[in-house]
Length: 116
Length: 116
DNA sequence: CAGCCATATCGATGGATGTCAATTTGTTGC
DNA sequence: GCAACAAATTGACATCCATCGATATGGCTG
Image 1 (cartoon, each protein chain N blue to C red):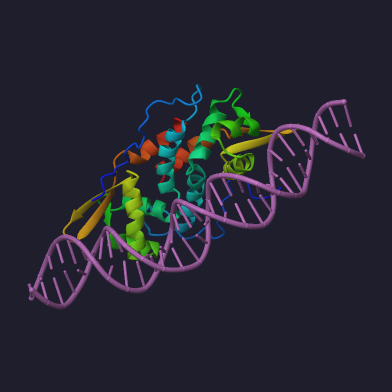
Image 2 (cartoon, chains in turn yellow, red, green, blue; image 1 turned 180 degrees about the vertical axis):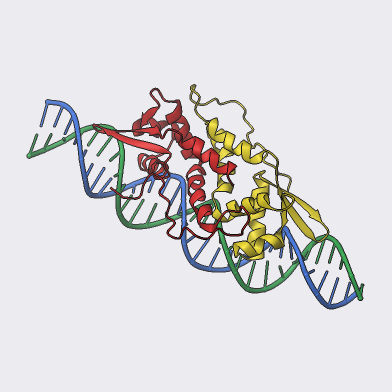
């Protein structure tokens, strides 16, 4: 029900190229840090890895709870963080929720490091 | 003076290929998360950016304190985190400490995402 | 040696975050 | 409609972390 999803830029002042040289502005840095924050947890990395290695490139929560040895609410929480960061896509089919990698999202994240 | 630097693997049991498929083990995930933890702070991203954009690819603490609007101890702390993560190199010249990017470190970090 | 300067370290503190137990929501089947 | 199940949400709690002020270390210069 929340409106802000899929990595919306929160900047409302598009000015402020900061130092004149090519260094990151505070807003750019905060934006990029959001993605790395999502990646900065071992269990979330494992979730991404399992989803990526899955049969059809997708997995439901019930398949993810057991290998991580975490409770269902915790896994659900981590998945939400990854979806909010724009890395995972959620599709509800019947009672189950299937998660899959957003195409190109990992490559984009890797690209963030190149454009520092 | 600490012995553990430059991103040493902490694994002492090299077994445990976890799920049979190509998913990350808990140790691998923890290891990779360390790098992303270092990148998951906007001020640290800006530090990397400023160092990278600097004159000779290096900068000293005094040059970094002002543009970030942070206290000197805080900047020093962030720099230590980046050094411990293997992303920055510290060289003390006289009274000043000069920080520079470890060659290939950012590319290696980007590579971690490809090998999830 | 005495003072100054740049940097690192220490201790404390407020806020963010990962985790769980309990509950709620939404869907399928009887 | 009601029981059963999957998933999400809530609230609480413990831990981690970014930041600061104060202090320590180490080098330069008078």
